[in-house]
Length: 242
Length: 366
Image (tube, rainbow over all chains, first blue to last red):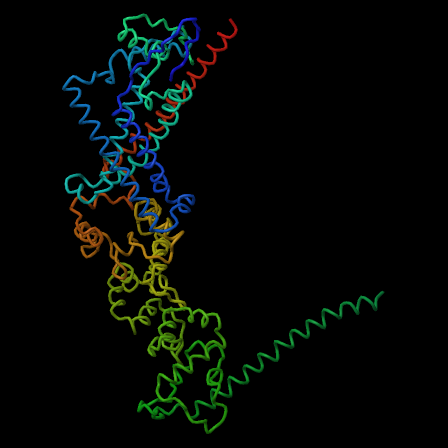
């Protein structure tokens, strides 16, 4: 992520980088990424059991059970990750070691409005953003709710008999529908929204490296850059796809 | 010219005469034989006390009641004694070589295939034939169900079919008589309800305890219960099978049916809940699926299920606010959410791609 500045100077240039994600956050992303990939791969053949491609894959009853076991193992990993994420976040927030950048604010709605006007050619510049822009917050909170639904409904489907001691029976078919539909909604969202923003709009690998370059900070997180350094961001390429 | 056309016309005329003459001789022959052998045989076999003692000690009556014989399908069709009694061509008859009555039956019924080869072949594929092959002498052969000298149309009246099966399966037939199907047949002479053979087949009756039979069972019930006309007549829903197919049990079953029909599966089929021969109306207190008995029925497979469990069943009911509210709201929610998320993502990304491309082109031009 050490991109050379576009204006070459004769002096030696020290590229500054800025920490974006902690090691723990990067590991969390990896765990979520891998467990969701496994859950999707093992879940789709179960959702589409009536389809012949699924029946080709699940060629024996034993294989159905094995794929369900793998699904349950990955689900357990994801559940533990969700619990860690929540407990960790709450503890850090209480100890004031985690700034609440990720929470949605009124500013995000204003930013979204500005962005929409920009996209419709009603505005010349992109709005400037802080640590997380509204698109990234939408990504986080959409997946937060989505994973919440998947985990919740998943456990209803895993322990239907036990849970209907307290819950009405119709939550079981409801959980089945929600689990299987939410999975597709999430997959669509990740593929279109998240992949576009981190791969096509620009290749943003900071969730793996943990750092952003000065150039990226100035262009995409101008408000945070100015807050951290006290310098002017001077965003050169507002519509930038650098 | 004239001679030639007469000659040509003679050819089909000749054929016609030939064909008619073939029919003529055959029918003349049948009438002739019928008259002679039956009268001839009955001249001895109408003595009610005529009998033979077999080596097993059993007394075999050789009396033929003329009335019974004359009402049988064979007799009225002109088929006479010697058609079946092929071994008896002289008087005095050759001695009987059977140790018991059963021995005689097991040998004699073979003659049926002479005229009924298709049905005979089918019986070879039946559970009865399999059991006979394993050495069980009492498994039924043609004559056990159809009779001997008194063979009549087997389904007249239709209730006669269950009587026939009841000779060996009395407990099952007793259950059936009290079921919604059996009661309608016996009490109202209803012709729509199934009798034994509608589910089990006629000559190639299969073992109903196999995985193959089980996996096809809902389809069997659907033969009537998915017929809107037939169900409409009795004010019953005709969509029970279609909804079942989309339910947890039904989807599981469909995979087994498509891929592993010979592997036993535990997902519930119709008879697991409704009963087999004791199917009753759902509002009958004795029905397995009556609301009073439903939980106990579910607990056969889900032993720890509590009272809320029964409302989780969606295999026969459309999604409704009244019966399954949480499922109803979930369905409404996703009906809107899925397209909204899909379109929002696509439109937003498309707008971004357009804007970025336009900006880039503009920058390169200036």
